[in-house]
Image 1: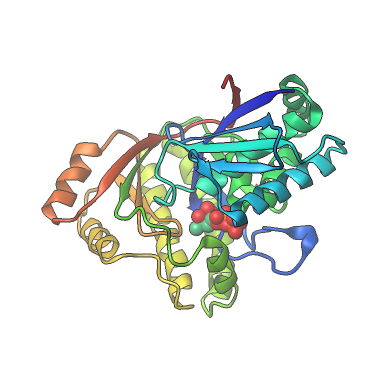
Image 2 (image 1 turned 180 degrees about the vertical axis):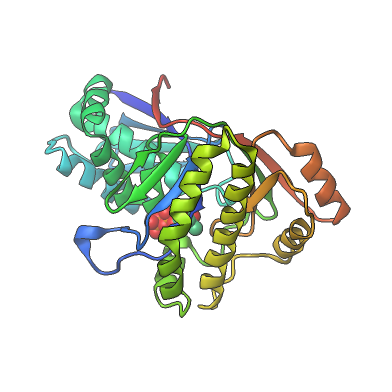
Length: 330
Ligand code: DP6
């Protein structure tokens, strides 16, 4: 093989993965609770592996990747090759990864990044895209599990539009419903506390035990509301209520460990939304200051009006639900 390229999409968590099992090498990035997500469509990471005459190299968005990132990528590929009992060498390959959305803009680039990397890694290990597709069709949960080794949330980018992750891997939910994600970006800077560190802190949060007790019921209710939303608009309102409750709780758990992801603009915007009674879109926030608004229709104009009225600086990324990763010619 000379070169293989794949694209994968990030996902937005409706029920959050926040806190993971620590210090157990057999359960790396293993969430303390099941989570539910929507895979995006427009945002994507394009990753390729190609033969190179140099040592192992990693390029991110056109520049040589940081040493730390390069080691993570190499280590991940090594695990994938070993899991497939492949003898292909790790040296003399170049991995290049490109995001079409601002990295660190509250869109999880690690999810799409590790999902695309795992897919090209499988093709490289099995020496053919066709073999990789066949293997994945036979082992979808194992594919998701392998993505998880790189980053927990990556295991939910292996399919779409809606995914449920429990224990080692994620599976597609049988829900056929179109949703939009309008992402309000208040900052494109890397967050001060990475989600990796946030998970470690969350494990120590005094609010975590209570959260873990409440989550099974909220997760069940949300799944049901989402399933029924297509036929019954009242169910989408119920879904929205649970979505916001969940996001606020995750950030409270975090705050209780002195990890704050919100910016003043995030707070101003969320408070303004909470004061509006009749809303047909609902917010959620991952580990960052940017806000995802989930709706059944495009809402760009409405949202811009609210933001302009608040005098906030922002950019918007419009997205919607999408599918799992694919090989591309590139
Ligand atoms: C807040 O998957 O980025 O977005 O497994 O350490 O790579 P690692 O963490 P990561 O955590 C995502 C946290 C979250 C919620 C979620 O996506 O479920």
